[in-house]
Amino acid sequence: MSAQHTVNHSFDLHGSMRVLQLLQALCEGHNLQVQNFLREQKGSKHRNVNLVAATVDFLFEMHQMISADNIRLATQVSAVVVRWGDGWDGGLCSGPSSLMVMS
Amino acid sequence: MWLCCLGRQAYWKFLSAAMPPATTTKLALGASSTTSSPTQPRLQFEELVDVIMRVESRVSPADHTTSSSSMDDAHITPRTSTKRKRSVGWVWPINGRGADKDMSVRFEDLMARLLMYARNVKVDASTQQLRTVLRLIRSLIDTMSERSAAFERKTQDMLCELGALDMVHTQLCRKRNEPDLYVLYLQLCCSEAQHSSSLTLFATANATSRFHGVVRYAELIDTATSLMRNGNAKVQDAWIPLLMVRRQTLGWTRLLPLLHACGVISPLPSIATAFLTTWNYMWLCCVLDAVGVTMDRIETSPWSCSPPSCSKPRSSCAKSSRRMAVRTPPLCRLTPAPTRTPCALQLGLRPILRPSRRRRRGARPCRRSTL
Image 1: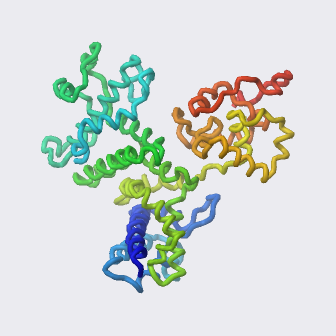
Image 2: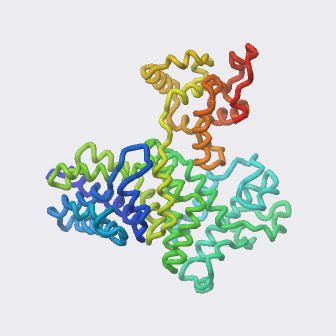
Image 3: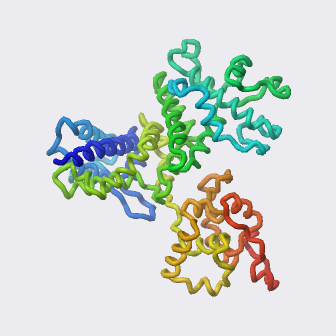
């Protein structure tokens, strides 16, 4: 890995951490409305962004290369995924929980 | 406490930049300001600055005298020491101002003023000032969270009601026209990761530039996180309508009045507007660039929303903008209302001094005035 890639790597990790922390704060406290919004933006004029699926995919991509450098990021991604699965009253058949299971 | 580290003089200097001009006769800082003389807003503002600094020192957990006090303590009435004010070079009292003991200046008033200032800060021009306000927000929340979760939540709610969330959202969206910027960022970063076997994927040119945007607004994201952490559902819910609303795309129907105001074009008859095509629209964009009209100026034009002096909330401005787009006939849109001209002047646009062609011919008056 080149030196520049190493620098960019750590640079981006900080950005990822911030975005994931924001997502975690958004879905903390079992707020069903926000959790649904992050999965599907109904009523929005622009394209839908399924952040639940994206985060789960991100975790799957990450788990193979977890190291001391990115363990904090991996923990943060896991925390966000756990928060999304937390307190989902619809059970595993609907919502983010089902998305995570199907992933 | 970071405010103390910053230094009193430096903090005052910064806050002076947020002050209204001395000619302002009314400052929305509370009930007392409605009866102010023209010279009083400055004094009141400085007084409020002093209040916020003392409030922050009072809510410190180390202060045993207020450790059991309630949140209402934040609504203190400034009973300031004359000696203390003089020690920082502030002439006080002036014109019997010191006799005004019952003036009730609230902590929220100053915070609302600061947040309104921060919302209008241009990111490139005053990043440091914006950061100062953001740090103040986080500092307040952190200080309260050290006391108890209930204090933290009330502080979050209060700041949200005062416009902190709107300010953060506005600054996150500034110059990008993407309200869901921070949502899309994660999605893009993840989608990049899907096509690679390494996290170094983030180092690709495209993703790096996107992430640069995130890091550039790192403090905004930190503040957003701070505003809703520990499961504050009220603030979380307040995000949704903000994320759902995208600013209106810049269409040629909005460009024409602006070009007219800039003096680039004369008032066009409605039939001419009907022949405007996409190509023409792109040409108009080039013209806009040539005359130095940026997106920011368009967004703050008298025909869109949120001019610097506009006190209306962004949501109501957006509604009125949509209503105008639906109801106003094209020709009427070409003729700015006289009452809006001062806004154009504030933006540095050349005012329209001649009446429209239709008015000169004695046609019926424009319906715009009824909106």
